[in-house]
Image (cartoon, rainbow, N blue to C red):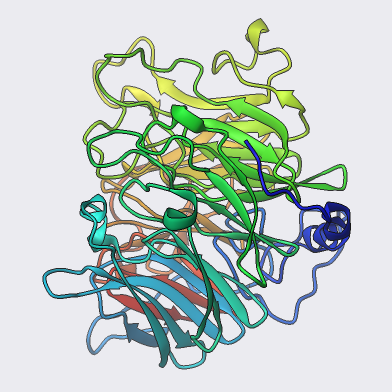
Length: 513
């Protein structure tokens, strides 16, 4: 369970709570803000994955965001600048903070794209300022992940930034590109990652919260079941403060999700999605368990083919609700036929695991389940889709009573955030690895074909065509924003900061306004 707890927990707790209640300098209004209070901010930086500790893909500050642009030679439109990344894939970022933009990508080594890079660009003109290069460890354990580069999205606080390198090292660097300290989770904690380290850390007070990525090896064996899944390290020194091995021997495959922060009755709790399909809420200062919820009431029996979905998505906190979807690693050959998107109550205590995906089930009395969207359609239709929701690796955007979530297979859903009722969906006819992003009454989402689609926020499906809102679109064709293709695959989430839209393709970073 937990070890190395702080003897000075009561001393730490006061500044920790102050920081938690303050939210962040990102573009999302703090969840503890009184209703109707006007948001004011000097800037709308996006200093971490999801913009705020609650990880909600929502920006309530920026206005007049672009709906039309072009990168075609001789026909460029609304492109402020473009920067080459130098690799062939980009999963980390973008993060915008203090006049810089941070991107995680890869770089070619002796044989393949086997290096991981953190790049820093000037926000004003896209000039490359510096880079930090990480070699993948030579261990065969990393053979499947070598081309992925840096998957961790850094969190920036002041003149420091924190991320996880592929070799499972927690890195603290300054904003000038100098590494200040490193904490090696493989060496110190015997962590064995599934493919590579990947967590996008969370800062709460003086602590950096990390999911360790402990999982099965290339043979499917959990070789280090006693290694911790969740840790907290001191952000100033890099010293371990506490560790938790709660998922233990029940890790399904990998641990790819990220921690989020909830405030319940004025008290902070860190939400850790475990590789065992369990959501854990822990006290940030000690790692003690507040509540847990098993989100897979029907696990596969031993010997059955396939794999149970688990958490690739990051939990989103909106008020006293948590939103998260289930999925598997994108290239997994055993992707389940259907999955679920869940809404949980974060005010619970103890073991509040669900017994089914039906909130009205009497067996679910006292569980954290508020609603679940997904599963197979029964009876299955003769034509068309046979499931309500498929595997997802994306993070939700929840705002104004609506929740937006997409599947890896390319479906975007708009749901009632309170009840889970589906208002509409859209089929992109291609995969989507990024997340929906809400800003200025619009929902931006990018797909693997390089298209950026823009929907109007609302209960009816409306989208922009050639920069203009097309009223009452009921069809599901491919005419959506045809001019907003970036000529390269996109596997990240669009971000708006300080009036500029930033989109990372596999090889380029675009600033659009």
